[in-house]
Length: 172
Image (cartoon, rainbow, N blue to C red; front, top):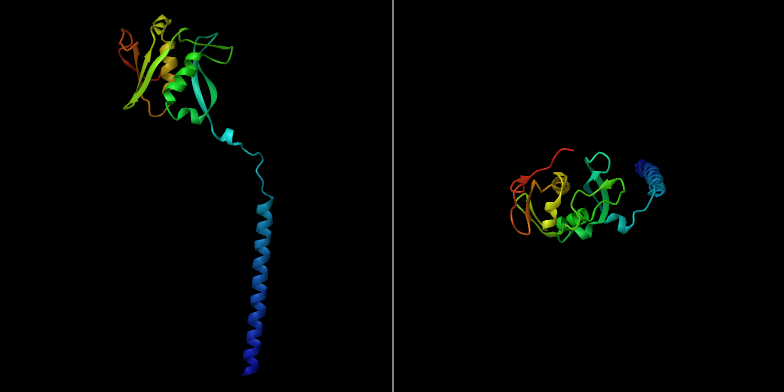
């Protein structure tokens, strides 16, 4: 009887050693595989903070509104993202193939968001625009913000003829 118990214990020990050896070999293989995986390129902190913004300007040739993508530090969008993006739009395009439909000298007096509508107050120079591209340059750019459904314009704090409506994004 003692012999059977001793043989059983020895067999259990041998089987346990084999199982433990197999498991540790598989773990070692997996650890080696994990160690081999390396990112192709590290992303810097600055790149992680970058976000893309689409600004709408006129194509110099066709006069159709097209987007110009800009990268900006997302920290700049914390305080008043609408004002920051509008200021970039008013400054004009970086590409020479695009023109700014917003009249030169136009200034942003205020931009405030309320219940899906962005209220944009501009200086009187905005009234010197030709056509509706100046309006839709702003509307299409600002409705890229998902929370904005429309834009209400005022000029130096006053509602002007032709700008009484709430403007919504125009399909381009």
